[in-house]
Length: 200
Image 1 (spheres, helix red, strand yellow):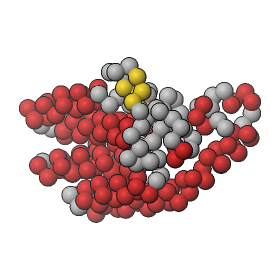
Image 2 (spheres, rainbow, N blue to C red):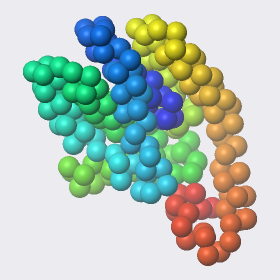
Image 3 (cartoon, helix red, strand yellow):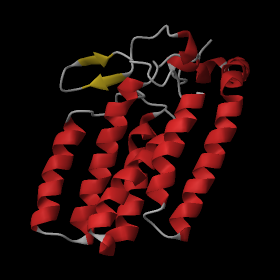
């Protein structure tokens, strides 16, 4: 799924917490958005493996939630939301497509790596690929209600994320051709540093 979809899913987690603890609204909104995006910082270094921990994030989020309930503060509540959003991101990647350059072809059986199981989890393809129309639908379904739990600033972030998402959906299937062309322009000495899935 798109990074924006993951961010908005993280915001949805934050919205649930904000309903119960509105005094932490700004903190949990930021933590949810950041936690939703965080695992994808491994995009160019072992994507969906280096920073994706579907089991361990969940365990850490549960532990952090207990700490937040026992000793609530901006830090403890924010940490719990961040970890829960990261856990949701890593786990939900298994619901999408594989890691190939053109995931709509369904040729990869690698969705997300589970360090706990020591293997790649296969793609379920409920969301066929990042940037698919259903990916945008998920972003809207989780983002719009979540935005209602917060003020105008967060609502503007959600509107911007949905606009970016819509633009990405429009160009998504053209990107592999662009990536192939760019790869051909890269000096040979640099190509070995380009992730394998971006190579033609």
